[in-house]
Structures are given as C-alpha cells and as structure tokens.
Length: 251
Image (tube, rainbow, N blue to C red; front, side):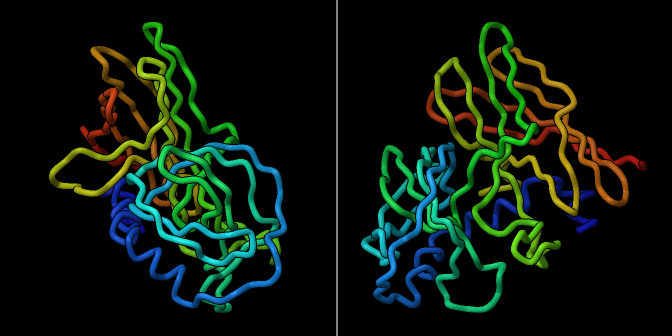
C-alpha cells in the first residue's frame, strides 16, 4: 500500500476494474438458479457509472435474462436498489455482497448487479465550480458493496479498500462521463479521488484555460503526503485526464 501511495497515487487500481470487466458477467452467471422471492426494493435516485464492457440484466426475481454490451464508463441514472445485498456465488465472504440496482442509460435499462456500478458519492467531497462561464462537477463515486465500514457487523470490514472513479460533468458539452487516463505508461486506467483507510484525496486548487482543467491534488497517507498534478482535457466525445507530476513529502 505504501508503494502505491508513493509512486502510483490514483490510477493503478483502475487496471483491475478494466481487466476484470468482461470476466464479471461470467462470475455473475456462474451459478444460475431460479429464485422465487422477488427483489425487495427501495426508491433510490442517483447517477452512476458502469465500469465494464458488458453487463447482465436481471428480472425482478434476480434471474439473469441476457447480457448487453455497453461502452466502458457508461453514464446511467439510478431509481431503485434492493434492500439487501447479495452474493451471487452463494459464498460466505461478506466482501462479495452487492446490491441489485435498477439503471437506465443510452445502452442499458433494467436491473443489474452492482459489482461494476459506481454511484455518485454526495458526502461533501464533490467539487462544483464555474470557470470562464463553464460549470464543472468533479464527483467521487462509491460501489454498491459493503465498503470500509460494515453496518451489519457494526465495525470495519476486512474487505480490500474501495476506490472512487470520478463522475465528471462540464456544461460546455452538457455531459457526465468518466475520465480515462491518457498515458502510454498507464494504459486502461482512470482518474479517481479516494477516501479509505489507505489514503484521502483532496483537490487543493483548479485552473482552467483552453478547454483544459489543471488540478492540484493532495493525497494524505498514513506515512506522509503526495502532491499530484492532473490535466483534464475537455472534449465533446470523451474528456480525458493525464498525470503531469507526482511528488512526495513528509507530514
């Protein structure tokens, strides 16, 4: 963890999600079974990102219907989630528990399993500002798993730390999207702003010029700090992020 904090401050974890995206459908369908009890539902309005290239759609009884192709980083709206979390492998590890979530996007509509779905985290870590007449929103996200704190067990979970892909909005092109990292040294990664027991990311300053945002981020780790500089290029098809500089300092 210390090595990641010092050298690869926010993008290494993205590779895990990209490489495992296609495998996710196989895992979800590994033990298909007819379930007679319908999903107990909660109304739940939010926005989110699907970080996979394909997803399984389910019926109201948690039975898989079909697999659909989606662009990696598909933006979706959320209106309903399951009251409970489920482990589709029927195992006993609570870290495998996720909600079922009803989503709607350009390429998908229906119930999905929340393993590769990340919702906007609205707990005061979002950054909303207007620069040169353009409104920007930089919103950390969270997964539909247990997370760091297990509310049922009333204590810290033993699950691996979760990461927070950024949900990015700009009024110039009026769109929400994820931010892939464009760098030959870091293929298949995306920009995150994390908050877990390993480190905490905070945006310290933002500048905008020539359709590019320049972010200075402070990462607070257990063993010190990392200062990270990111450039976000605004684009109507797909905005992207690039790592410019990392420096480490003692606390």
